[in-house]
Length: 214
Image (tube, rainbow, N blue to C red; front, side, top):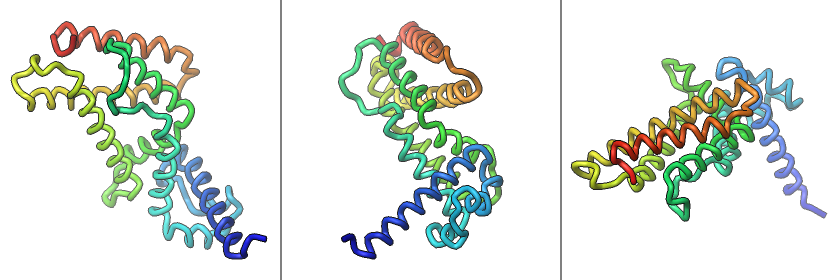
């Protein structure tokens, strides 16, 4: 027979996850201001004391929710670690855009919550917004590293110029992913594969024409 402490721990973890899931659903559509403990109580059926016991306050609850949604999204997102992949840059870009599109369809809450937090800037920044911006910077850094290895060294005066160009490519990629998210969430998204193919082809061709890649 399971020990009482084990059952209590399991019930506590189940309550914690239920709170995070409910908060994520509310926050992804209502943003920071629209997310209240009262709404979480109504959706979960758990007392407010349980929410405060697990998370302390609303700001920490939203930060934990952001982390929870990130853990759900990250395994589905594109990887920026170099590995066996097509030689053709267009195919490599298309693979990443396709996976990004799929992740935004399957697990959109992280990106949606993050963008809502980003747009709702305030004097005292919520911990969740700070964490989301950190994740974006980390993602941009990983992209920059990937692009640095893709761009031809001989196309630039020195390594500093190549890294600066790679940073621009990474930021462009982030902008395109933001736009892709808005498109996926605001339409039936049946043309995502065609759009990503066009973007990847056009981008790769442009970089080849200016001599930054082969």
